[in-house]
Image 1 (cartoon, rainbow over the protein chains, first blue to last red):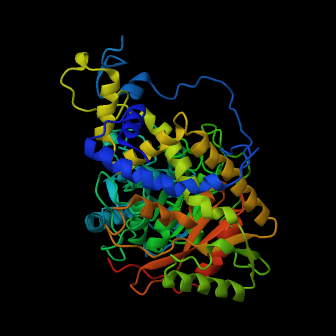
Image 2: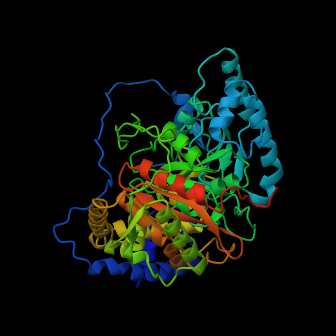
Image 3: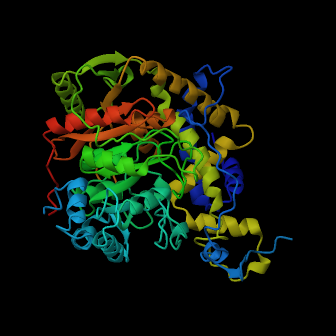
Length: 93
Length: 491
């Protein structure tokens, strides 16, 4: 059972503001979903390495060469609020 | 020239030999989209410079310059792929004002092969959904009957393709998001092997599962598009350096002696709609006539595919979507005064307002699965089972060339019918998610219709990097299909 306290904790970790109604709804839904998903607990996976990349890939690292593909101006142009090339945020110190 | 029926090759050849201009082709589809899109809501936005881009292709041809195999072919792009200077939203409020400074590699490859970007196509927000009902820009509808969903998450791509308001489209598939809408809308969709297509510039949902691929009207067009978009990319280290076959040139219907597996666990599923079973059995019979052999195979862990998929996808999503914070780009909540605000409250309010319900639900699920005390039981456990599932598939492909199965348990469902219960919605994905978990190529090819007149596809799954085999099987099915040439009554 995922209670309100757990939901609040998860929302805090996820940096998500959820309304009390949403918290109740998510609590009920996640409880139901996770109860169903619990079925994988019965499978024996002792000594099995977790798999992340599913196909055989010859991980290829490119040469570490700086390329000038984008300008600073282009990269910051989508910022909601900025001062010059700096992003504006609430005080952090 | 009948631009609705013509293949990419026919159009591109005609454009190159100046029988028709890229500008005329583009104008034709822009006009069609203008007329039909209001009924479907398949496009989120049109590309204002499409005609200029087409003119540039025509000018190159006039100067006898090389223009590539898709010259003048107009594509709609799922709005999950970044397009330079063209707004890209992931169908989310949080990216509703984002203008990418660069093209996704898939888009760049299409453009450099002469294709024209017509516009950006609707989807479930951040590709999280199976019905295209969670888009911030409104639901998208199925052109065969607008009371039905087009499927998802690439619902806009499949809808636009079925209505021919694009010549071709690109979708992405994390757990079935190309194959399921292609089946619901009666078009061809293929998800390549993980690592075939660059993910650079594609807004990430679950990075270890995401692949882009074509949703188009024929197997030949799918094969040609794959040739253009597949291949190693320096900007995505998970792309394979394997040579990309000439898929379209190698297409043939000689499937004699090919061994096709029928997954035991998919037979007699209680949820299977009778029209799906009928279509699936008809496909088996036709392939038998063509000389293919069938064997029953067992992949027991496919029964756990949905839990495995959602645990892994939600975990990766919660991490991938952490970047949307209202600082660097995208939506920011209206704050009167930043100075009295904490950074955490700033993030939480922006994200709480910017993400839709289903996206938040998956971020919450993923955050829970990755949180201290639950990581081993959920995320890590799912990744371990994932390895075992992949091994079961590898074993099966030692004796099989491909697998044939239904794509979904039912044909397209009605708008609003399933969206209230998340678990019920998640269980729709029972036949498609294991393909992504194992990294295999999979495709949907139209093969029948339901009693209500909605299209039904069948699914082919291949071994890693064996797209050609499933393309040839699909090509064979397509040549025998009664669904071929049937178009929705939107015209």
